Image 1 (cartoon, helix red, strand yellow):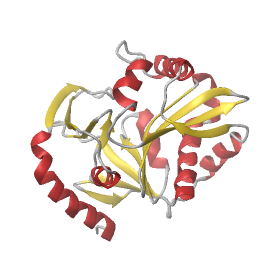
Image 2 (image 1 turned 45 degrees about the vertical axis):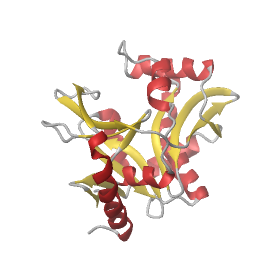
Image 3 (image 1 turned 135 degrees about the horizontal axis):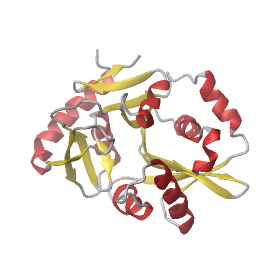
Image 4 (image 1 turned 90 degrees about the vertical axis):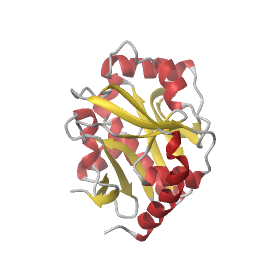
Amino acid sequence: MMSVYDDLCCNEFSVLQSTIEHLFVDINIGCPYGLPYVATFHQANFAPLNERLMELFLANGHRRNGNSLYCMRCSECSACVPIRLHIDEFRASRNQKRAVKKNRDVETKLLPLRVSQENIDLCEDFLQVRYPRESNTARGYYRDFFFNSIVDSCQLQFRIDGRLIGTSIIDYGNNWLNAVYFYFDPCEEHRSLGTYNIMCLVDLCRKWGIQYLYLGYLICSVSSMSYKSNYRPHYLFIEEKWQSGK
């Protein structure tokens, strides 16, 4: 059963969609997550949006890539499932609490979304270790993916003794936070920084009075995307509505 909030968002989005659907096109590429299927991005470019419009897109299963908003319409695959947390309901697991304790010496700082050579070098190291494809470059990620002119975005930096070890790219509105991307120093993998990042985002939502934290796609068959199911309770956007996950 849909919540009152989701029912309202669905109804508002239906009205919006009837006026903008003609702007969307289908882009077919090889699956960016390495699955053996053609990926179909149903997407459109936008000028600046107010935060409520972005909220409606997120609440109806869309994601942001640069100035584009999209959802997946792959004909042979339905592995990409939008996932979100409801902050009032979320309860950290023992491992997630352990990750917070493990990183007590990490200093976090919220900053405007800018790029520096320090960011580029760290992001490049991360991509070369985790996703070593010729087309994956730090400057390309910032230019085409992170930077945008349609929503408010910022970065959460993680440092040890002044050294940058991680950066979280975030979009935000009055009652939502969108986790866009997180990269970190591969040499610090033992710290469970990915887990720590999400715990910091949960804390940020609580501080700002935000109820909904969008974590992108849960892809159970891809190890780098399946970990999101460990955050409970969570909700999945399946058959055009948010449903309680396991």
